[in-house]
Length: 267
Image (cartoon, rainbow, N blue to C red):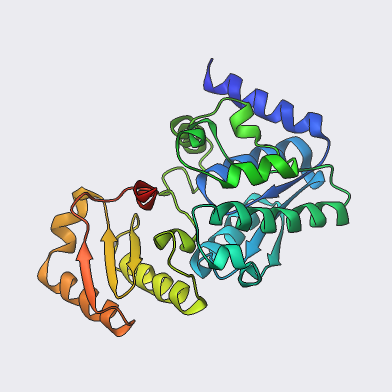
């Protein structure tokens, strides 16, 4: 099936829903979904972004800018995840409890605006990884139109590029809680530490990066093509000094390179 056909199917599915609240992170998936929903439904579509300590301020600002550039209605919903003990405990189902909390709030916001459905940006490829959050979405009746239209990661990037969306080549991202091994309790200070560490890496030009936090050890993941750049002495020293100023005792580079969801290997 052609990309144009899948795009038309996506918009038809959204039009059939009548009105939607789009869970909008500002990533490539939710941006394409918002584009389709805004074209199909106009003011019967509202984008909502969760504002919480597990999401970097950089990403929240980017989401606001993208929605504004699209002309879509957009709202931030402040949320506190630290009232969820099963999230703080950080067992292997952490994402389930967090997603349920966030999307329950989104459902309440949709009801406030008399919107019929809440939709989110999971695509066909997302079923391949360990994603307990998908179970929460299913239980709450959240719809995933990109997956229903059969769109893959590659196809979403191609469509986004064709439509000149700013996220067409944006690296994948995940909430800051994903930087900690299961079983290590999550605190606000730890989240801030990781956020500031990744802000430093991005300021040095490493757009695709992760700082995995193993107590006092920071394990940096960047693509292998960036190994030479990150090991350049001045850059390496800025990273080491910066990370130590944030409270890390040791700073390590993962020799396997960047890998989304790498801590799932421990399951």
